[in-house]
Amino acid sequence: MKLAKASILYRALRSSASFGAIFILSSSIQEVNLIAVLSIIVGTGLIIGVNLVWQYLIWRNYNLNLEENNLKITKGVLSKEDRKIPFDRIQNVDIKRNIVHRLMGISQLNVETAGGNKTEASIKHLKSGDATQLRNRLSEGKTTNISENSQTQPEYQIGKKELALLSATSVDGRFIAAVGTLSGIAPSIIESTIEEISLDPTAGSALLLIGGLGATWVLGAVSTFLRYWKFKLYENEDSLRYERGLINRAEGEIPLQKIQKLTVEENLPQRILGYATLKIDTAGYSPTQSATKGPEAAIPLAKQKKIEKISKKVADTTKIHPQGITAKARRRYVFRYSLASLIGSLLVYYFTNSFALTATLTTALTAVSVAAGHLKWKNIGYSINEKHVVTSKGFWNHRTSYIPYFRVQNLIETRSILQKRWGVSTLDIDTAGTGNILNRTHIPDLNKVKARELRQEIFRRFQNSLQQAQSKKKQP
Image (tube, rainbow, N blue to C red; front, top):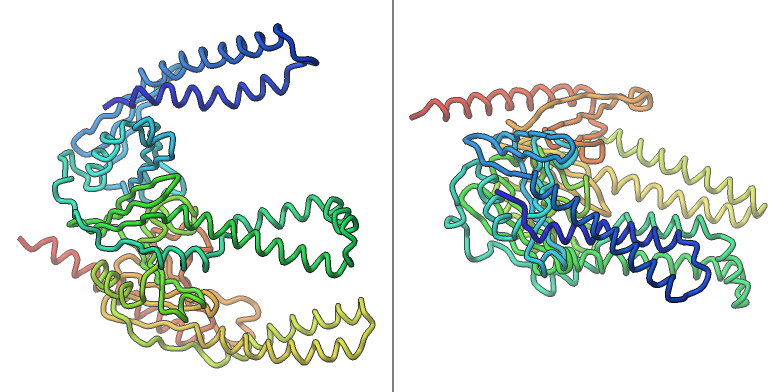
């Protein structure tokens, strides 16, 4: 299989655009005249011409072959590279199409493998039909076309109401960082603007804060809306297939037999309205690695009953009331927040020298600390059911994770210096999809005896699940 011929033109124009911009900006032309215009045209033409030749050589030397058990990729102009990706290591295969891709009839296909923290192979670019066909074959680890088995009616399709609610209640950390960085690198511009419009510094700072929060919310809402526009989820025999996106259209396959963890997530507004999100981790990559990469949301937003129905259908999950952690943890959280509040109050007194303000602030923050510590403690829980270890945590953004016992890779019991003083431990539960600390599933602040017993019980159930799986394989 070859790359699409249209990819030659696309890649050449894309790379030429950046080189052309550098050429124009770096030129020493002082005035616009015929020679200057001709030099820009000739220079840009040369850049595009050289890029076209180079991209043609890349296209000519790039070959894809489906062998019996591998995807073989051969590429390279100055030096040759042969790579084989075994079918059984492939976890996810995604297709990406932006507006230009769709106009040119081409697609980018990304292949993720077990344990990979980055894309194993990014194939740029195939004909859209070839990309879909190859995606189907790789997802099943076969060299036969399985598109006939695909479900024609979606299992789930996001509605206008759900898309609007998802956009309005989503927060994108990238835009928070961008707005914060912009505020940090342009303090002089901000100060001069406040002075020009004759605003009080305090009022100007408050207005700036509100404006930054508003900009962050709007950008996050627009990004979410564009990402999940016309989201559809199809159920095939052994996988889930999704489509989403307005500007950048994405398609992907989630093999059911390679699911490492299911997470039901709901922030406070969504929880009040009875909605939730279903996320799926596989060994290739996980939701936290990128907001635009991979199947970060199997169901971006749906009623909680719908989420429960689909998660049970996909991984046979069972919703049961979780057990709470030790009461020592509540006192620990209240103490932690109260200490932070006291430090904040002392800083206020240092800068204002106002005893009345400090006393009022301390009283209010103490009450908030008690409530925050209680809510944090109340929303942490766990349960052991027949097929999964279940963990839950979070008040503002509540997450309930289901991990099949046979997917457990490591069980680690840890205690910090402060946890030793309180007599509590944290139990970390790692799977093959645990790529970083942000995606690690753990049960914090268990009684140390209970943590040890729970670790042993999960390990016992892990062994039993492996024995059952091996017995099924031996059956004719």
